[in-house]
Figure 1 (spheres, rainbow over the protein chains, first blue to last red):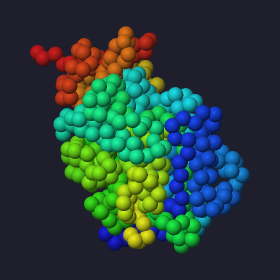
Figure 2: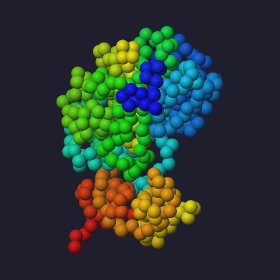
Figure 3: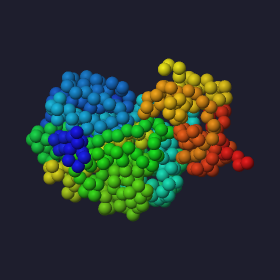
Figure 4: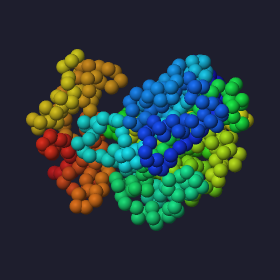
Length: 389
Length: 124
């Protein structure tokens, strides 16, 4: 069944994020991933006067606990009616918002908590992944996951003439936003000269094209719209949310230059009934600089092949036409293994008007986009203030 | 239905120096990586056939290492039969590998295990 404009029957605007928090961004030694996730959850719940006992829908996926949903219920001492621990990679937490919206709408639960945490930096010093390496890729020693993104970037450059300065413009824009965010891990200025001089890791991606390795946690609380106004001054209503997946490993990606965001984006926009040109603030999962370019194209902010030119001249940096990754992104704010939930937190905070020095004035429509695996799974959420309902 | 043991069969052929891929008898389409059924159709009428070894570089990267470890190539290769696979191009510097380059497979032994790599096609 489809609704007006070819949209599916997603419950547009019928649920909302009423609280959004981060915790322990950077280094948080001495805590488990679950400790950090719970810290972020308690912060979010406290914003709206709730406690763990009020939560009856749990959505989580930790890097180091396969059965995270059960572990979280146990840790919080609650008996959730809905527990979801789906794993589509770093995109999972935005897909959690999709499932939470459906569960809330069906009254399967009343208060949904989506949370994530990782202590990977202080514990391991590198990305912690529970995924089994492909026996058909691992013998060639691709850096996981950098080389997969580098291969996509090489193909994109071959077809569209991507320059190093265009990738650099993405890294620099993220850094300039991070400089406005007191929580961001990397806040010193980044010049194009410094970008160009950075150590190459997997051509054409250098170390400044790659996301950070940090600790950190995030949490959001979702309720039905009828209750949202009682809890929060400016709820961030979920207007659309759609996911798509193609593959796991990069050798099976159908077209290295077109991500599944080209499917998730149009579906989310149709659900929300808005166009890319109406979006005030964009939060994209920038695991690597090429992501930002691919997603801007695939989500309809510019035509395919134009993304490199689109990001030039500070267009996505503070003061530019389109604010992108206003917290500093995975490149300069935080990347605790899986970053998806941070896109949702920042989008919600922008709509709530609580983003401080990096606040986009009057932001009414925000897009949060999650990516998982090796450009494998994509999920697009569109959120709006009460005026957009 | 249970004739194909994907990874086990593939590696056994490779150990004998043979680069084998799968083909569906009904559709004629080739399948790589090896699996028990053709994608989408689910057809299980798969049989092992010798790959031609001909391919084209679809994407390429150089993994940079701290000296003295050597940089190395990682590439995606479009096989003449259709499927794409990860591999690398040997015989030229890792940063001389170019998209569109014609390459040919060879089976080598690396770290005690058989492996398919590619070399630039020699023009004759």
